[in-house]
Image 1 (cartoon, one colour):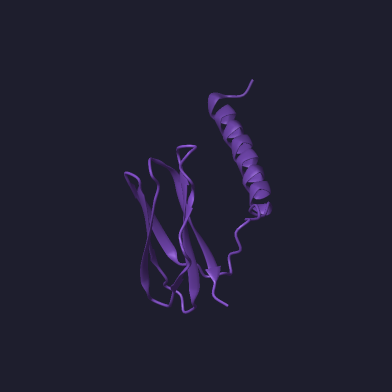
Image 2 (spheres, helix red, strand yellow):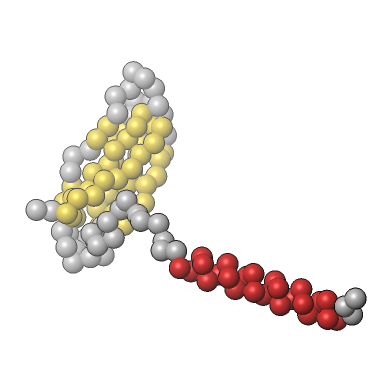
Amino acid sequence: MLAPRRRTAALTLALAALVGATATSAGAVPPPASDEPQDIPRPRCRTTVDGSTGTARCFNPHGTLGLIRLHLDCARWYDPDVDTRTVRIGPAEHRTVTGRCWQEIAGLWVSHAPEG
């Protein structure tokens, strides 16, 4: 029978081998592919909802021109969804885009596109 210290050492080595094998195999797996292209510079936008008004405040930290557009999904079936006009945002520029539903807003998001 193994002494308590030897048993502890053997268990520690077995656990370290298991953790090492798991870490090695986990590190070999590439990260999952993203649907969003990473090479397209996009403006950074924050959205807020105040009652039935949705607002997007955007800043373009990149040296390229872009186009932004606010989309609102209205909560009521009789309230039409809103897509604002496309707004041009240049390098180092701030833009605010606002849209409104008649009643509540179920969701909102900003779409981005490079100009040109």
